[in-house]
Length: 201
Image 1: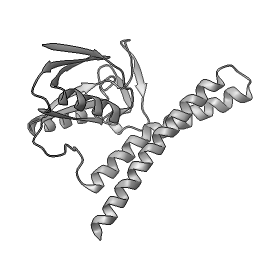
Image 2: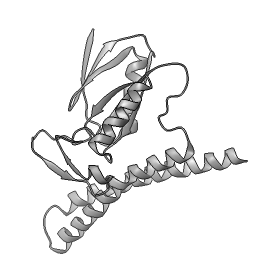
Image 3: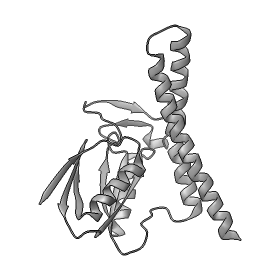
């Protein structure tokens, strides 16, 4: 039986990952994704595990190489959007991205900012980043777009406030969301640092 679910998680990677793992625990395996669509087929309960990774910093070539590497390791990989962009021909500038990924379009990495990675459940925790250095680097990469969003929305909020323009609160909300994401990622980095220090002892 095919089951279709329509959801949008934006940048809430952990929530998306947890939901996919709950679906797998209930006996549903992901077989296809769309803008809002997640399509599942029935499987054994807990037969699969999922990780969701942000790759919006990568160039198209780098993202494809990484996906190919994961497939060669035996994983199933799905590209997923982090934004809702239905228009074609759109070009986005990402100053935080690596050299080949700063200009993004529907021909490169636009609407392909996430990787959903599936593996058969072997009873071991599923982590794509296993070393302390790799995890720290990943969380620092995750912070880059949120720093940019926070800075831009805070500047726009100040401009709107001093110019007495409507919409000041909208920019304030976006800045608050970005600040919250930065705080969450900073907490994760501190946890990693404490774990690394406890292992040294």
